[in-house]
Amino acid sequence: MCWSLSKESVSSFPRYALNYDACLIALLMKVKDIIKVIEDFAPLSIQEGWDNSGLCIGSPEDEVTSVLIGLDCTPELVDEAVACGADMIITHHPLIFSGLKKISPEDQTGAAVIKAVKAGVSIYAAHTNADKVMAGVSGAMAARLGLENVRILDEEGDGTGLGAVGDLPEPLAAEDAVRLVKERFGLKMVRTSRPVSCEVSRIAMCGGSGGTLITAARESGAQLYLTGDVSYHKFFTPDDFMIMDIGHYESEIEIVDILFSLLRKNFPTFAVRITQNIYSNPIFYF
Image 1 (cartoon, one colour):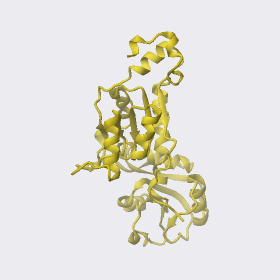
Image 2: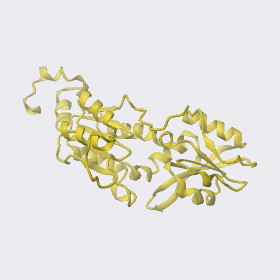
Image 3: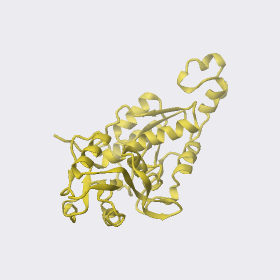
Image 4: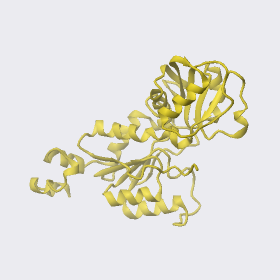
């Protein structure tokens, strides 16, 4: 237990702290302390009705000595948490979206659940609640493109809602806008509708699967809309509007750094890590 540690023994735990008192604070952290910081940033109450953000494995009263952050809670991420001594995992995508009819090691979700429960690892997800705050997923996309006058695309009130829209510092030809997006997001390829013949001065975006916001993007005055998981028929667009599918994973991955920075700011001496197996994208490009 933490109370039995001597100052000499603290030196064997360098990841925890700057000093002995800080080590005690870190070792006595609870799951609910971590949750409070995340939900002050992105309240659980604003998540979409179909979502399952929040604590899906563990108790708010469980003690936490280390946190591991990733985008997807895969069995490999749980293995990494156990290997590095993390007893709490935070991801963007929930491990459990809906009720499980069985928990089997033969499927990805079941395997992750079994590994986490056996190891005593708590699992928390900040999904659509982190999508619906400006400092979350879509706001990060806008910042990466250097947009100005950024606002929420589909506002729900109280400064929250899905997506973002903003203006480029200077208008660009469609081909140059495509190059800008590929460069800023580190993409080798994108899927787009027919490029617009006009200049692109306003860009709308929604991280993840944003097909439902295409109409809102058009109504915002944007000439270009960025999102992921766009279906075939949605690429039939009018001459003054184009869609670019940059990938679900690619549009959301920055939330990992956002959550990491959030926890480090609030708990500067606490052990917070980003997964070293960060590329959990199930889609491969050849």
